[in-house]
Amino acid sequence: MQQQHSILKKQSTSAENSPNHQASHTPPIGFYHNTSSRPSEKQNTKETIRISNSAAVNEGIGWCGFILLCLSYVLIVFTVPFSLTVCLKVVQEYERAVMFRLGRILPGGARGPGMFFIVPCIDSYTKVDLRTVTFDVPPQEILTRDSVTVAVDAVVYFRIFDPIISVTNVEDAPKSTQLLAATTLRNVLGTQSLQEILSDRESIALSMQTTLDECTESWGVRVERVEVKDVRLPVQLQRAMAAEAEAAREARAKVIAAEGEHKASKALKEAADIIHRSPIALQLRYLQTLTAIASEKNSTIVFPIPIDILNSLPFSNK
Image (cartoon, rainbow, N blue to C red; front, side):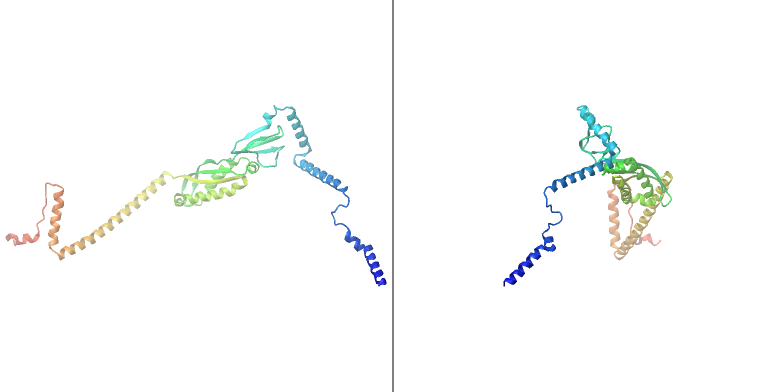
């Protein structure tokens, strides 16, 4: 027993001294043995952050711009409160201000509505109106698909939904939208016939709106509505269309009159058959005619004499 106990003790002692056992008690990676090393690592982290911030500044406006910015802030501080009249700007509720610092857009998006701060001689800004804008497309001379020349004008409603894109991606967003609307009107109506332009204005307006919205989306502009206002035809074409419409109306009138005569003749035939089967009906018709004549108070009354009465007279055989 003593030998076994000594053997087990030796095995436990050798196991404690083995490298595997020492490795099991070593702390995991990232665990700090000495607390004095933690502040140094924090300082290193802060230094890294400062270096990254300075690199961002250098990448943005550069060291020269950073020096100018510091000088501008010093000048503002020394000239307070007079500098506040130049540094504080206000934009309305329906406006936004796109800020530029030494030619670069400032982070944080467009400023407004309300008051914002700028650095004179370094910062510049552009106001953008977010309200819906309406403009008339000038009359366009368009050759339709069936070779008819017409003059068409329209109305376009649009608004700016992204001020930054509308300033950076296009020089003048409203003017560009107007020119594009005029071109789109010519392109869309050039594929339509005259009859389609006159009758399907809603579908044409919807097609124009879809085309304009797809093109102006990269400009920060959203086209809300397009309406075809007027379609003007040449005078000769108007006369020709009026003559054609008048001839069509006359043809329809003649057809309607012929149909009425046809129906009237059928009704007269049926009435004659009924009177032929009942001779007394003819006498009643005579009396009805006399009643209609007497109601008009005419001075002359023509009274039809039945042929049967004439045959009964003595001189009828002659």
